[in-house]
Amino acid sequence: MNRDEKRLLLRAILKLMTAVAVIVAAAVLISGLFGGGERAQTSLRLPLDDLAPGELRQLEWDGRPLLVLHRDAAMLAALRESALRGELRDADGDWSQQPDGLPVATRSRRPEYFVALAVGSDLGCALRWLPAGGEFRGQPWPGGFADTCRGSRYDLAGRVFDDQQAQRNLRVPEYRIDGATLLLGE
Image 1 (cartoon, rainbow, N blue to C red):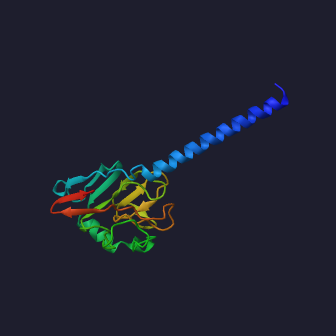
Image 2: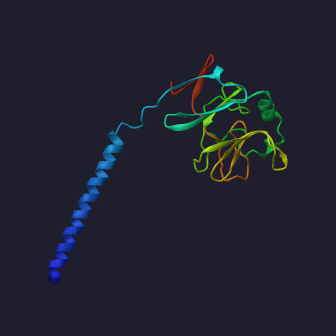
Image 3: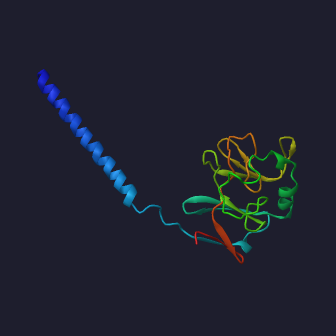
């Protein structure tokens, strides 16, 4: 193959690659514009009278892990009185993803029930429950959550502590409580 033939072949390959790239870009653009947008959200109904005080239930909702914690009287007292409250990064929920109108102290529709996506706000890692006991930063640990990747800790209202890898509170989805039933996606 002489020099001119090689040059002609390379030009043909370049034009073909450009045409394929334009077709792929157009397909992506058209799919984004007319592809139907978000997927349909599934609904969840959870009878709350099946959840004992102090019990944590982890479920799957809309393809994502969800936690529902029935806070008992000791947990609610810990939210009000914990010496660790001053060490929360966003105690007032200014940067939180949560429905409007939730009380700052509990981040819930009813104080005794806490609902959040069960993934850390840093890397989206699974959460583990850390019951009350032991110490954290020289204070009694009142209970809460930690992500399984880097160990960022969250209190009983899903608020992240300062100086953690995670910078945001746990995400609280839009939900409502009708009588004794938790409703999501309705």
